[in-house]
Length: 409
Image (cartoon, rainbow, N blue to C red; front, side, top):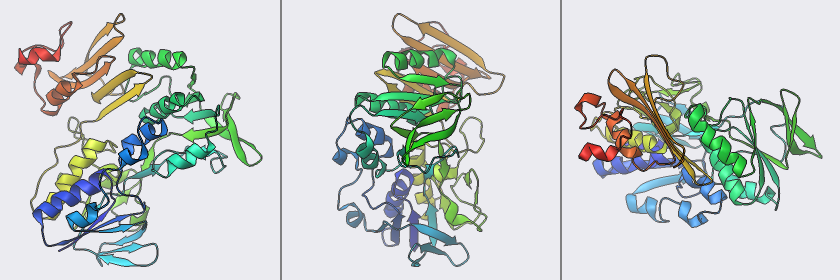
């Protein structure tokens, strides 16, 4: 059996290892446009912030592919997949045949589409190669404008502040982390940003990048204000990397539709990770949930099913964690944008700098936000993932002063 996997990040590696456990003899070819050994994408901001050394970002040793019996094709970009011919075509024209194919190609940065995005001094942070490119422009005291106050944007801000840079953060929404936090939780981060000396622009939409001598020199906002900067970093989301599937009918603008087995509409082709559209474990709605643990879980299911084991993926429970200047937040499940019909329980402890927001629906916990005191987040996530009714728990989490440790009381 000839197995081909496009992508060597979370989903691709997880699939390959499970597949090898089930199929000891079949060929497993891993294709990646990146030339590096597999690395941890969530650690890129830690590398930028000098919290870890470069060697710590790699997930596997140099002999990894040989040890597992994989055939690596690194530094090779996929330009076309032909489901009928069962081939994957690479940039140089080479075609790789498959009996089973996994698409775990991930995602690329999505830019807002404003004039000046192609100028020198405009960056994104998605790949390992982006870090040294960015560092070359980060001269001492450089002013940086970060566009986008989602998880990646805030982590980038934290890294830049650690390096001693002046930072301006621009967000189109009325608060930072708008998909994760309500106004109370976001207020903690607004205050921390001020403490760190970060200039925060909310409800601000960039319309152009300022230019001088061919380089970015700041931003122009929709209201006419100008934000001076020596470089601009875009943290405005990602889009699935599926352009090589054009004409196949396998992918739409949001990504690749998959079933509970991670199969696409073509039974021989699977998809997992940031390019796929799995279902939300609570709402059962398909969506793009770019979360490392979820990509790993999807990859494992896909790998087993490529070998004929037929495992089901139960769905994604969205989870995010962000730390800014020592202030931590962990959130999961349904966020503040969820629709009506939710019972919301809030608990604010200003003395300890802590906040808890729980969302319930039909007697079940469906959303959690913890600011400051986040140590017990995993217990809340287990309750949500297992869809346990509140009445089945030893203690009611809606009670004032509830602590997850009581569940073991």
